[in-house]
Each structure stands twice: as structure tokens, then as C-alpha cells.
Image (cartoon, rainbow, N blue to C red; front, side, top):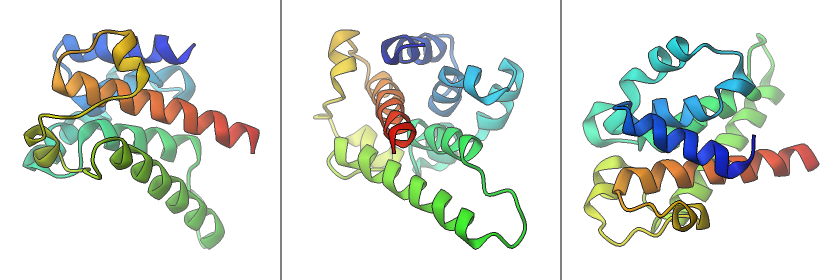
Length: 150
């Protein structure tokens, strides 16, 4: 699936009433081996910054994808744990760097001057959360491509 197809899928999912985290997770479902119901369930509580304005659901959905693709799932494996932490920090840095160094839903919603990735222009995104979702999917796509190459 191309980057733009993933972006469009996430945006379409959001337009069906699903939260930002669910929408980002859904865009990568084919890579994760999860059902649509599982994606919905896993990310249900993450929308709206964990429902209290904290870390943006679009960012936390991407972190879920990273964790599932690069898990720390073995006991006493500090190297893998550190690697997963590094991936998460790097993605969140890229996401916040795109949006005036903001990461919290509450702050992002108050900022009326957010500019998304080029994919938001290509898809003619006008809605605030759609801009965050599409940008998160695009940033994650590029990051995953870099990880494959490196």
C-alpha cells in the first residue's frame, strides 16, 4: 500500500467516527495481523489525548504501530527495550517537530496554525484532526521506510 493510500484510509476511517488513534492504527492494520475489531478495541481509549488532552491520538496510534512492528517482548532483554524506546522517541520527535513542538491533544487543538505534511495538501485536508492523522500516517510511513533501509 502506498503512503497516500494509507493516509486516505486513515482519513476515511476517521470520517466514519473513529478516533485519531484508531484511524492511524487502521491504516497499518495489514502490516500488524490485527482484525478491524482488534484495532478498534486496542486504540479506543486513546482518542482525545487519552480522553484528557494528553498525547495526541494520532501520535499514540503511530506508537502502537511501532511497538507492534518492533516489540520488546522477551524478558530481560534491555537491548530490545532500549531499541523500542529509541524508535518511539524518534517518531514523537518527528511528529512534534511537524507541529510547533507540540504533542498534547489539548495544545494541538488550540494551535490554529498547524501545517501538515505534503500529503495533507495533496488530499486537500481542511479539518484539524485529519491534518494530524494524515501527517502521522505519512511521517510513520517515511520512518518505517528508513528503518527498512538501515
